[in-house]
Length: 157
Image (cartoon, one colour):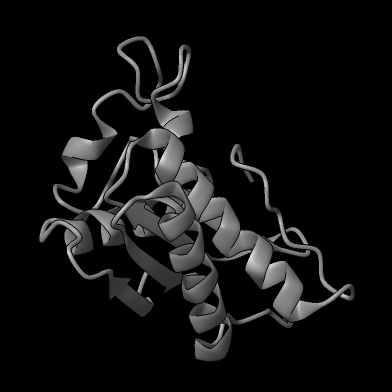
């Protein structure tokens, strides 16, 4: 038996607020979704004026990042597992609508353990990355120095 860390609503809300500030700075209308380690939504917000497709896409990005323990854009980079020569080519077809292999999904890694995922949809790749990493930095700030949160864009556990 082991003890595990669990992401809670208050932390997810802090992440979303920071992500919305980053989205405003980037001039992007985003949907931000935070999921737990099982890929279930803890909190989600679609900014006023954001695309109506954003919630479904943000959930898929967060689910993928949490469940597969890596940033979603790492699937499609040259040599990535979802490229035509990769060992996971076609993986997104196995879970239609739930698996995303493009930029905007980041696993939430605390003390080396994946506790959830953040999915961002609505901007371009650079904007989605800035918003997602702002959410991760906000979690680090909320948890304090006794926890270590991975806050870079390229996360693979």
